[in-house]
Image (tube, rainbow, N blue to C red):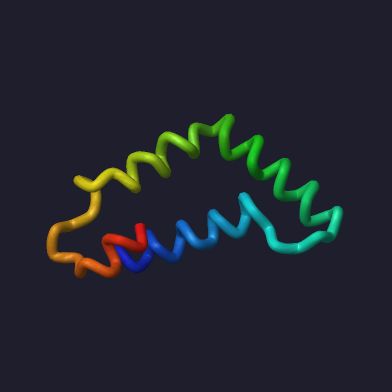
Amino acid sequence: STFRVLYNLEVLSSKLMPTSDDEMAKTSSKSFCENFLKAGGLSLVVNVMQRDSIPSEVDYETRQGV
């Protein structure tokens, strides 16, 4: 569902850009980012963000949030 995609994008965002200043969190985030990019995660996210991947029946506010 669209809301599941939005939720997963929010979780991904928090993994890629943590708000904590804790060194352990920064190290973990850096490792996650490297592995995410090596696994081709960026191209998957770009595909999700394409206008055609969002069903047309999804309301305007939700589509703008993506």
